[in-house]
Length: 277
Image (cartoon, rainbow, N blue to C red; front, side):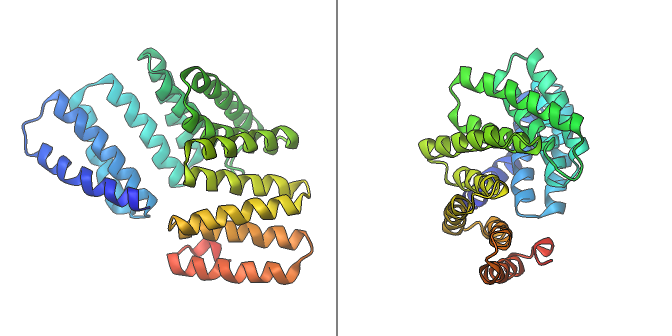
């Protein structure tokens, strides 16, 4: 969380300074990238109107630059924008477009990232069809091949977590568990604490589904501690929601109530209405 705040504090004055100069392709390219990142930072903090302003400025800068790489990045970031706002269909379309453009631009790392995002948008359970999930699996598998060739452990960890989730959606629980476990180990190796927390939360869900409640509790507890230590209370509330369900289905109803109370207190503190239900 602190890193996002610090990032925005660094990028904003740079963008303001660049906007005072006459428009050139290089300046507009830089502005496009800066506004893209500032937009994502504000979305993370649920500052939608400010994020929307950055999105508009990003679009304008990219249009002025006439740069194909920036055009691909605009589609890539807009896909993330749509996913965070909850529109999986639009997100998938933008990520498909950006992945295709990155092929033409010979940008394999960026293509693998777009494919990972495409797979993630394909895993939205309420909206995903069997075709969407199958497409997500293909996208994740291609992304993993690229990431292995590039030696990118960080992004591979994210993609394995998504791939594991998709495996579980098609009821391949054994494979899904292995993929998520590998994601956990990669995040431990590279020292990505938030990535590790996310993968552990996913692992807790995967273990609970097949009745391995002790392992689910261990993974969920570690995820919760990591989120609290990093100040990510919204995600900590999400873990407590998961722990509420784990205890309920394990028949530990009093423990389930305790976790539900903690979840609601955290949700109230950070203003997440959907977790209060």
